[in-house]
Amino acid sequence: MWARTESVRAGLRRAWQRKPQLAAAVLFAAALTAAIVLWTRPQPREAFHGLPHVYSYLQADSSGQVKLHMMSALPADIILRSAGSPLRPIAAFGINGGFFYGSDLLSVAVVNDRPVNGVQGAYGSGWFNAKYPRGTLVWDGASGMLSVQVVSSGDDLDVTDRGHYWAQGGISMNLQREGLWRAAAAAEHLPYADEQRMRSGLVYNADGKLWLIVTPTRCTAEAFRTAILETVPGGGREGIFLDGDGSSQMNAEEALLTGDSRPVVQMIALAGAEQP
Image 1: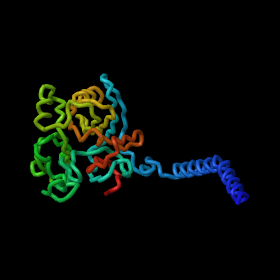
Image 2: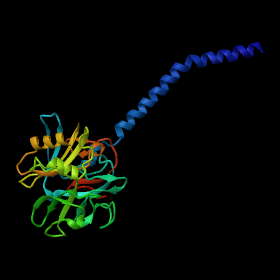
Image 3: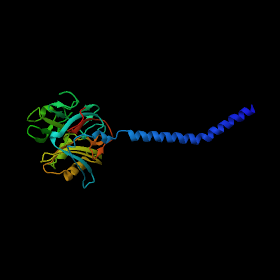
Image 4: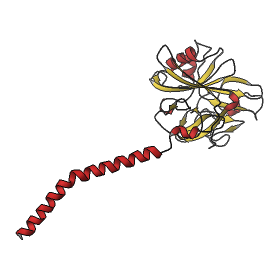
């Protein structure tokens, strides 16, 4: 009995002595596995390989230390599309679109009379600016004109050819009307205007170029608007605020901005984008 007890004790001592080596082996195996996973995992920018680079990229800091990441493109190269996920895994250059709740799109997002998230006239489809008339950036493809129109739905859009346009809803910036923009933004119910939030916007200039803009800097709507006035090139600028905070996301070769990685319902993409 005594001999058997001593044998058991000796076995336990040997196991205890081997414990550090076993732990080290387990840790090494875990580290090796993690390294292999990281090495073989597709990198986010791999999704962009082969996409046409139809934009110019600009990064600028305002006097108020708001950092803007901007993609400049032609209106004809814009593709409004549904997303249903964070932008990061989507094989498309571009930024987040309009406001949403759950899976419902609460901002106009229409291409040739077709809303991007459902059927014409359906709630959450992108046919309506929910609750309030709001600033909507419109490209009239037939005339080549860009404008911001305050509308409630796709029915209200003033375009030359219903088969050749797109319209993206948001909140009016009124970049040409310094004394009006605050009252207009309040009337259009710009969310969290005075809070420090990440923000995004869509702006055009007199040369007919569009600027897709995202800032990861937490700032007020006024500071974001001021930064745009200071840094976006060209005269005759006008634009809209888009959804912001964690929805402020950008897919660019030069900058991958993920906000808080939340799924967004809609994306403003560029030519060559993977269709949903």
